[in-house]
Length: 358
Image 1 (tube, one colour):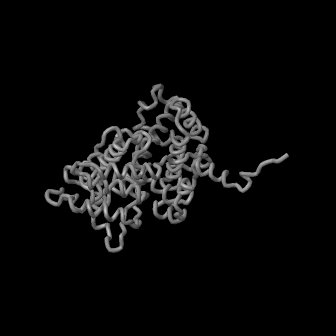
Image 2 (cartoon, rainbow, N blue to C red):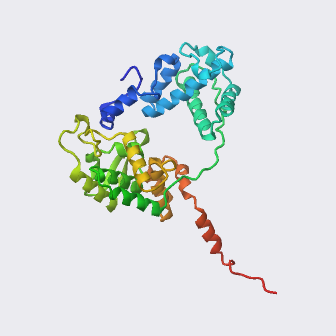
């Protein structure tokens, strides 16, 4: 265990990250977790998230950020600290007795404060509300530090349904053509990355974590590790198999870093490619294809794959399994229809050509 950050990283996890990724997780920059700034009960909760709930390092960071902000607000809300810059309030000596004073109304005040001072979106407030619910559930049911749970009746801020942004079929083909027409030495690698995203709808972390041994070329399938360290199978179509095969012909073999020897995608330094590098590759290829780099991203390519498959008749349940969604409600965002489909539906009404005659 890396004590300074309370993040369990076993050898299996290390195999999925490059040396630079590990440094980023443990030493990081603005996203690092400084346990010395937290009260002990918050650090114990973070240990619970990592050791028991098996949350990823990034998820633990998000909980830490949300809850430390909430506790700093409480200190100011209870007039225990006069600093108007709430984010600068020191909470490392905060006693659990203060937490015991928190009521549902205090939590509502925090969510209102986020709206008034930061114009936080409903999605942001919903995430923080979820963090608070899990935190108080832990304090009451697991740690037994509280007798009553003030977040018991906490509702999730209502979130309006937003349609996912995605590339059209024509834009997807243009992106693939652009990546394939590149003349640099990483052409095959970058094309394979774009191909897997657009055909399989995998997550960024799943693609980065692919090992060569995870690919079964006989059965055209791939094993990936998704959210919650859950393993699932992705079947590869001809486009994916061909792109991977062409890349493997030029993939470096000599001089590859020891902990990256099994990695499918390698960086210029001959180590497992990082999340950040893949994001830069996608951003660059989007720009070369004349697509809006601010509108589209790696995750939007996942949306694109899912949307194109659904629009071409893929069953919603099959799509759920393919994408690794726990709930079908998450997958249902792809059942949206665009304006052209709505226009066509009205035009196809059998009454569309009826005319009134005098």
